[in-house]
Amino acid sequence: MSGGSIPRLVIAAPSSGAGKTTVATGLMAAFAEAGLVVSPHKVGPDYIDPGYHSLATGRPGRNLDAYLCGPDRIAPLFLHGAAGADLALVEGVMGLFDGASGMGELSSTAQVAKLLRAPVVLVVDASSQSRSVAALVHGFASWDPEVRLAGVILNKVGSDRHEELLREAMDSSGVPVLGALRRDGRAGTPSRHLGLVPVAERRAEAVESVGELAARVRAGCDLQALLALAHTVPELPDAPWDPAAELASAGGAASPEKPLIAVAGGAAFTFSYAEHAELLAAAGAEVAPFDPLRDEQLPPGTQGLVIGGGFPEMYAPDLSANAPLRAEVAALAASGAPVSAECAGLLYLSRSLDGKPMCGVLPAESRMTERLTLGYREAVALRDNALAAAGTRVRGHEFHRTVLEPGAGADPAWGLTHPERRLEGFVSGGVHASYLHVHWAAEPSLAGRLVASAAQAAPAGSAVR
Image (cartoon, rainbow, N blue to C red; front, side, top):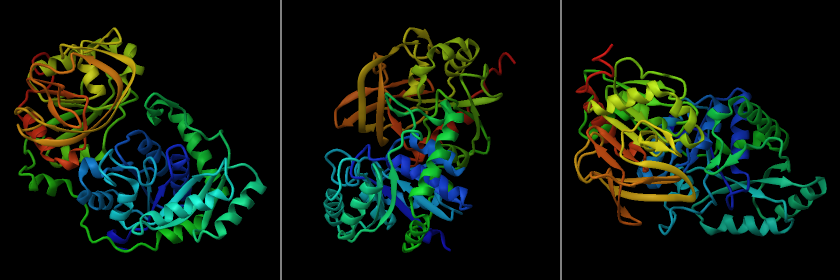
């Protein structure tokens, strides 16, 4: 089987809340438990669902976001992530046809399904309907003839009689029912202000939840029919995304110095795209993970630092209590070494978070609020810095319930250009800190520039160790 013809399905829904994550994660786990190598993917920018996908399959959860990365990169990124897999499952985002606001189908599940030439299985919340389900499915199946809606999984079915009525209605729709799942809250995953609680914060319970989801899917879905459907795909003509080739095309080359770049992880910093570490490695870096909740020192020899997103507000007291690491981070930043911080990382570098002392790298205070800031953004780098050359244009995503005061420094990280115009974030020395989540696969020069800057930096603590 060539990489371009890998069996694949897209798991979509008419709207959010229908049970996409439940069904997609359960299918991933069920097929993996059956001995298949399953490649998990998620449409959109969300970091949390891919953590459950990874737990279900043992492979990195990969995002496919046509807004952040461009439609032309969707199939190459998919083929890169799915290399060596027997089956790829793609969980959609929101409703099947919902995409970036005001931009048509861009970044919608439907667009990704078309780019991957993959059949769509629609997860329908059937809890308050019977015959109407057929009309709903008919509408979704006929809306865009380029989208192949090839099956339905009925979710939240109330009883045997309810299932019988639903199946009778679906007989006339021309779309086969490939599964029916009963209402069951036992296998749920807890949520809070930004969605599901990440796997890293509840690993034991998450393992149990994923196992229960797999059991429900095995009992309620026709796995053989789903697998057969996944095998009906044509070959994709695209070449797999390759981080080294992408860097070369962006004018970069691997650093011969092999600088060590520390990447924050653990329960407080769970938001990261797998391609970021791959790009750093392709640019010549040695990538060393560390946990700011547990590790009191940066990895020995650190010459650069990446602190991604997550939930530092849930761990502010513990992050604050790790004073030795906070001091090391501040010293590394003061040395001029490159530090890239996004969202949670931005808060960690501030003076305080909800009154708890943080690293004090940035002249700003941060706190939780009730207001959700959410949406795609377009931005430009206003001047050269350790992450981006002046004039570099990126697309990113904001997703937080915190506020930073002030929101921008004397040298902002980005000038936002759409959907609003404002200055955002901080550049100071080698520090680039912003609320904006950017997918580096769309702009590989960011990784190359960070690694090149790190190669010129003195290792962390070199003056005192």
